[in-house]
Amino acid sequence: MKKYQINRSWQDWASSMEDSEEIKKRAKTEPGDRFYLCLSDLQLWMEKNFAGQKGAVLDYGCGGSPYRHLVPEASYKRADVEGLSNLDYVVHPDLPLEAPDCCFDAVISTQVLEHVADFQSYLKDCCRLLKPGGRLLLTTHGSFEDHGMPHDYYRWTGFGLHRELELAGLNVIKINKLTVGPRYLIHVIEGLVGSTSSGKSGIFSLPFGLLRVLMRQRPLIQRLHEWTNLNFSSYRITGNDEERAFRSYVGLALEAQKPVT
Image (cartoon, rainbow, N blue to C red):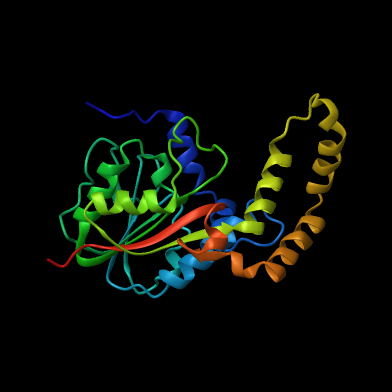
């Protein structure tokens, strides 16, 4: 039985990831951009963990492949839903990818898992596709606003995601939390103000209205982001068990490996 159906709205949203501005925002986001704090931290993690990867690489749920430039020497393959351009594989959510077993040195999955209804089947397929000793680099959300609706299904804790990877047959090498503590708080305030209705908000209508006006001033937001980078750079990427990252974080990023035997 099919777990879910792809409808046109899902495909349209996935296709929007190929927009040049969207790719730029993810590959080289700048202070002042929407979601800069979490996207820049994600970008930093990918640069530290993915750059220079060689061999056969699969971008499983590729969108616009914003991190492809990090691996110029890799044999790079793209997989996503029908309708995106220049795909090597078309994803059918209820079926394994039409690629041979054990054929990739690395699989990357960036901000995909929360949109996969049967995520265990997806993770097991990632394991199947990897060569023994191959790496899975996966990022997803710990907490984030709803997006890509109606196909936005899950959020994880670090330990919960660790468990799911092990159940899929992979050994977790490390897991990091992204955009934690005070960076997380500023991200949440930006999102709350940006998404609050301009209609009646009772006693909060005036302060929210003033904040909304301020948040629309890019130079001001740019300075806020730069100040946050200067004062809270140590809260960009933390270990899963670090106390300062234990309770509040936007993203999760992990490296896992397929067992050799």
